Length: 274
Image (cartoon, rainbow, N blue to C red):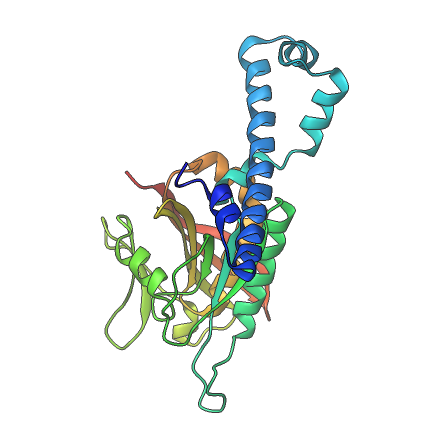
């Protein structure tokens, strides 16, 4: 088969490129293996829910022992793994302009958001690949991705937010950024812009882009992203139950002590896209 990636690896004549291609394909196969384990476990659970009976009886129909069925149910990743796609997953944070460091800097808040998000993904058996988005924002995900920044810092975030059918993330008079319900005009502003401390608002949304699942986390300020990923970490199961694998948008409001969220709550949504 001309488009078979396995055969493409076998045919590659450059040994360095062949090694690189083989490693990438092995990673993809591992991720698909985890996802297939999740799909199989969830399918077995659905058979029991729909038919009644026992897991042992379903195992017998599949040619699996009672012990093997038990192992499958215990070892497969959680159902909510499907929220992020198949993997591997790029976790992308922006490199911000600095007059003192030409190569740019990573904000402490962005690093904390990436740490929390990466821990969630690894617990779901994802291979996580950290990505530093260049200062000019020019970057395209090589895999499925979590992009932790707003439209000023990433062309990917800007495109996704611009085409979001239900929520807007845009700049208003005076240079202040807001999240706005496109249907009603309801706005969510950051208390940080009014001089308050320790509270921010963030956009959280997911789209399927070029066949890949891309999650965008965009605080009005970087602190808001910390709150949004913390909310996601604590509420992933219920959020997955609510939106499944559909594209969706929501806004999250958080309060903080330093970098640590003390409360995180839904400010708007989640609403799935038609």
